[in-house]
Amino acid sequence: MKQPQEKLLGEWQRLQHQWQATSEQWRDLLRHRFEREFMQAYQPGVMTALKEMDKLDNIINQAQRELKNL
Image 1 (cartoon, helix red, strand yellow):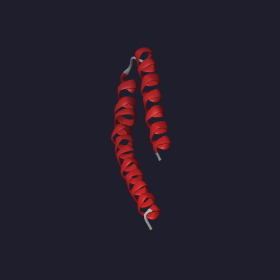
Image 2 (cartoon, one colour; image 1 turned 60 degrees about the vertical axis):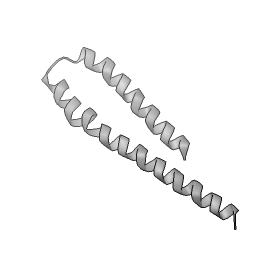
Image 3 (spheres, rainbow, N blue to C red; image 1 turned 180 degrees about the vertical axis):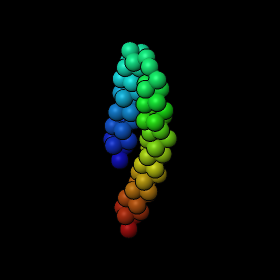
Image 4 (cartoon, helix red, strand yellow; image 1 turned 90 degrees about the vertical axis):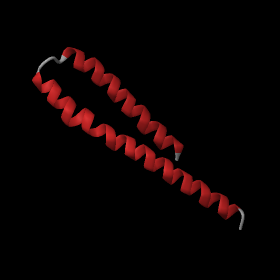
C-alpha cells in the first residue's frame, strides 16, 4: 500500500512545483482565484487521503500478520 501513497504524494508535490512555476508567470486576479479555489482547496483532501491510506495500510498489515499466526 505504500506505493500508492508515495505516488500520490509525489504527484501532489510535482503539481505544486508546476503551479509555482506557472504562478510566477500568471499575474492577474484570476490566478489568485484559481489558487484559492483549486490549489488550496485540494490540499486538505490530498493530506486526508494520505492519512487514510496510511491507516488502511496498517490495518492490512495487521490482518496479514494475524493470518500468518493462524
